[in-house]
Length: 484
Image (cartoon, rainbow, N blue to C red; front, side, top):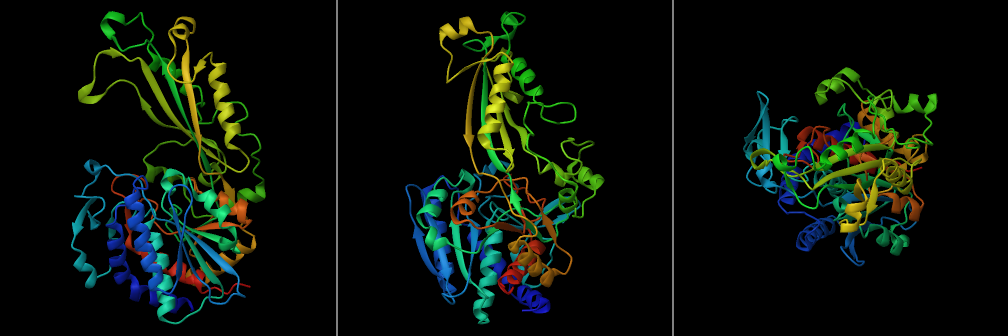
């Protein structure tokens, strides 16, 4: 298929494909619930079988994965696709619609998103309309764009230059706890030339995006203890120390005025050569526009650009808790203050190294660490008491722009969009791709479809219709690219 044929085929299929996405989004997909997993697995199995794919449920201890394949010729090379099917939990009280699992179509009018009837799609396709629903962008929308491209090829009897393998993950938002075991157990089945990840948000320019890496993640919970119970602030103020002030000083010391992490060794091993800087900064970015879109006056100075900042490990306070606020606020000295921290990792920084550096920092501030609740003896003996618990999630990965997969995918995007696409070195988020890279020994790149302002993981998650259309075109471009 040439560029004109790709665009025409996608445009002819987009409205019916959006209806398919609408139906798919109606199936709740919280990976914590086995019934959600099963419902989505059955839907995916039936859909792939309808386009002549063979399917197989890959079971381990825990949640299953679904595998689908179409072997056109055993002598051909194989391309493996990763689809995320589950979504973040929902709190309906924060969504501007009846139910996050009942997708709605909206148009922006005077800076307010107003609902419009789905039937309008039969008369008009506006690329700036959006679907609002949980997993519209992360990542059922990309999954349906991929399935639509496969269906187009099937109906037109177009055979790709390679066999297609697909693995579907139903607990990505929970860290994909069974994925590594599945990949190891079924390595012969999954073995391919490369992995394409149908997950993740586009570059800020909203151009079709190829992303060649992802940061890993480790999380830490720090609890700072005060008195053994909450105390009246009038009776005990000026006498009993407030753990909130202790925790505030502890976390404030983790960064300097420029936003750089002060923990010794945190950035060790990161050396950006001028050549690498030139490559990763070859994207259409404007610092003033980025700050305007985010509503901020200044930036952290970890890198000279947004793209450079993504090449370093990060440290973020993702949540704080102590006593009550708002209408429930009370005049108390809380007995406990909690900080939830996430650290994004790059290939040069291992998870345990960063966790150990952070733990040593806490110890060097004079804290005595306990496993859970301090004993009475520990409360009498230590003025600074805290607990430190951690969890390691996805590992980081990075693929070179000039690798064979990089050149092949760039050729597919060039054929489909000309020069109007972006190559990013690293995404800020994390993806559970390390098992494929380490076990199968294959490179990985993600095809980015959703708009960057899609409210990923948050209430009112959405997908721009124009992005969905281009997503079908991206998939068609890849699926019809000759594999040399």
